[in-house]
Image (tube, rainbow, N blue to C red; front, side, top):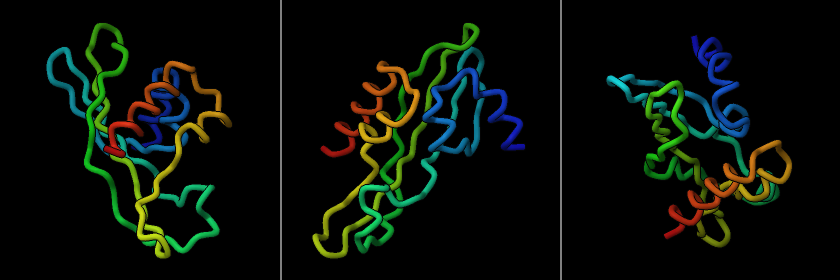
Length: 121
């Protein structure tokens, strides 16, 4: 069932969402569509040589996305994080690095940058 939703969402959502996140559930309430997406839990490339311990996920954040056929769309995003065993600092994917290697619109790259800024506070 997940695959059929992804096929439908591919032309509607930025490619980075399809490639690096998975749709966990969705909810339609009247004219509003809620998409719950969770980052695929893989160690960030820039930290593959480090000893990292899983630190589960950041708290879910909600972001309003572009409307789809007159429906308000909200992305409920959960991102992964790890703890560097040597520095005891939390690390997570740097979406600026990921965006450089993908076909993401500048607008969506800015959106992801804002998420990074929001979650590091």
